[in-house]
Structure formats: C-alpha cells, structure tokens
Length: 122
Image (tube, rainbow, N blue to C red; front, side):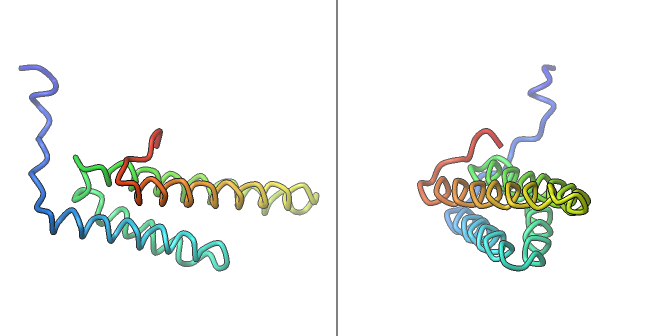
C-alpha cells in the first residue's frame, strides 16, 4: 500500500457546504481586518480557523485557513518582539512593519478568495 493510499480522502462537499466555508473564510478575513484597530478579533478569528479547519480540508479554503493561521501566529510573534524592543525604540518600527505585513496578508488572501483561488504559498 502506498503512502497516498493511507491518507483518508476528503468527502465531497455540497455547494451549500462550500458556500458556508467561503462565508466563514470571509468572516475570518473581516475579523483579521478589524484587528488592525483592536487585537481581540484576531484571537476570535484564529479560534474559528482551528474549529473549522477539518471541514476545509481538501477544498480551496484549506489554503486560506492555513494562510490565516500563519498570518496570526507570525503577526503575534513579530508584534511581541516589537513590544519588547519598544524599550529601545526600534520596536515601534518592528511593530509598524508587522502591521503592514498583516495588512498585506489580509488583502492578498481576501482578493484570492474573491477570485475563487487558493492563496499560495501559505
């Protein structure tokens, strides 16, 4: 038996299930966008990603979920580094760059979603 035969195949999704996944993906991008002004929505967004991640497997939304999750964790890391470095003032630059990077990730991902395409590389 080959390794690819060991992996479970994702179940076929109905158009309604796919639309629900698209809606969830849009909500997560909206929450991430709201987090530019207040950070709590990003936490809600990543929780939604982890709860719904299995449902997205095998669909084009899987890449968006991976993109969103990675955006959250890398954004959090660089923001934390920026906060620590704020003591020596360079941290404000790090936080600003992290903020711009997050804006880029949300815009790119949301545009790809609107086009009905996966976002790669995640």
